[in-house]
Image (tube, rainbow, N blue to C red):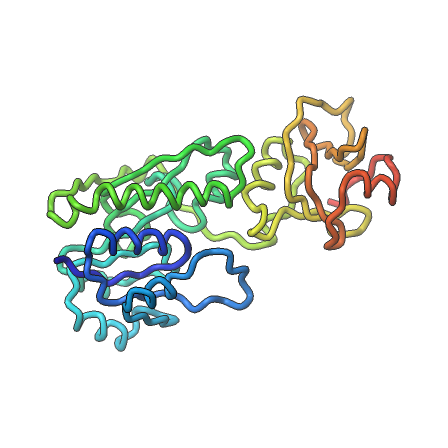
Length: 307
């Protein structure tokens, strides 16, 4: 029986740990994170799954400390698996497992290496993404590929919807290749790093809408940061507006009208740099409001965005 130390968090961590257990892998230790009270916890708990199966769990702020390294080295694991664990593992840790350290990444590597790959893929208008199991090195997401599973990104999919698909893709990729990996005959395909790029993390302020962009680009941003992420924001009538759902229309603005918001026939619209968006769901000053409610309170004239 092969043994493993698993670094895991989030839904991908939960489902992929479930796959290892289903295949009889001896998980000697789970390393996970304490939930951040400032973060909306909408995903499954790896710690709870480990507790259900009687697996010891630790939650170090930094897994690369001498104490943690000593604890893990004593277990002499065959493998490391990292499933959406948020800290980088340095060389002293990566040298421990006898048969290698592997990570599950939420994109079709070498595309979208780095942080929040699902969000970046949507922002860039990709029509597919997926999950990739690869060997770990000190440089993030650049090791040899063992398995990949693609999923589609539909035109109105939100980041949550795509992330749910990517979670299933991760489960399928791991489940399919794990027997070969445990038997020692899984493929190893070197990445062509020139075919992809590295992307950093995103902050709430990165969701501020630039209305000079096209309707399609703004639509991609809105769905990439829709709840449970912070949402796309703008200013209207001096108030904060959060745009939660949009649809690209076939309408075009007459002339060179400034970016603005209006209600027509019970539906809300936004004039963009190019094209017009239908604004399906939005909040004004933190209050969810329908198009009809907005028109009843403020009228149906056009309001320029304060951008």
